[in-house]
Image 1 (cartoon, rainbow, N blue to C red):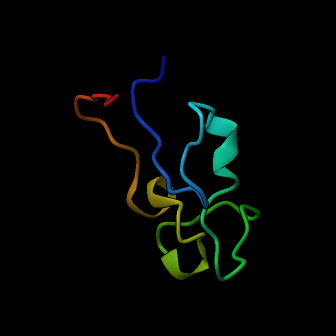
Image 2 (spheres, one colour):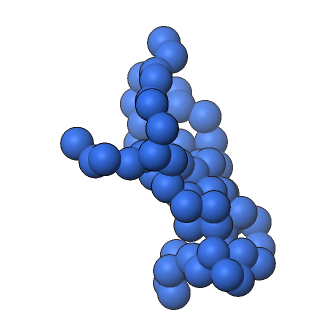
Length: 65
């Protein structure tokens, strides 16, 4: 388990409890994952790469059903 949580937004919602149905990260401007997101240049990051732009979550985590 990681000491932090990476968070991002995918193209599609989870369907039938299968995370692979979400597709790739939300990237309407075709920023792509390469090179990796630089938080000092967030305009070059995928829209859905929230951790890359804002850093990892380090507080308590939770899940919802």
